[in-house]
Image (spheres, rainbow, N blue to C red):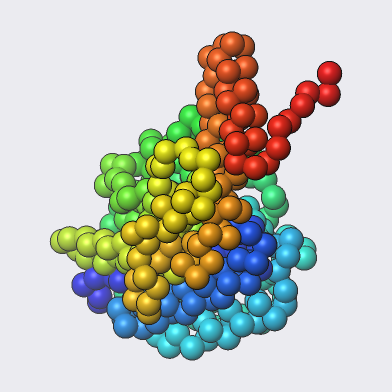
Length: 340
């Protein structure tokens, strides 16, 4: 019997999704980055000698996914000798009739969960892996409502594309509660839905985490991007978050200047030089000025939109709306006139 089980937990690759915030010419580059990160995950599975690879949703973008992409992923998984791969379809890639998961024959080391909770038992590791996959684009009931495992010496894992109740939850998704997680009796609950790593959590005796997406897609996704490595034994548990993202959106607070040439130079100050090891800014140094001009209005608009949403009254809203108009005019977008 195994004294410990090692796993790698990741989610949210969204292969073939065109959703990369930034200039259109970044899309090809970012798709290449995504595949590079995927290869890094596979390599990490082998070097760390993990028993399980958990993928908790949104491996593909159903609306845009191509058969050759799915085939490439399946072929890559087949090369992970000795690694059992568990996948739960999520909100972006549900197991519908036209699902990406139905486009290829998956290798024998891959198990894809479908519908309500089911499980796979691995006697050699004294482990049971549970999971439930999305079969529609919205969730009809809570995954963990009334769920509880037998309390014994086995390692019990579960994969869900879900989020924990925060009071500000996503439409079409029924959140889990901490009480449900605590009463489940699971050893580790692997979640997928958030875009950013939220740290290792614990409810009752159950550890749980949402590892976030492996690559940043939006200026709003501040924080690390990567995967979670875990080792759970009878006496102790160890977790390590590994940042694998090829790029990073960087935010700088700068004084407003009329001279955009100087502003572009300030944006690129202290940027790490690109090399094979560092995680570098998505603002490439070779095109720094062009990028600065292209993203400045977008960043400015995003920040003002936050103020508008938070406006406590009509006067405050009008104030920030005026700031938005003046600001966009100042950075060359032109003055916006009301239709009336």
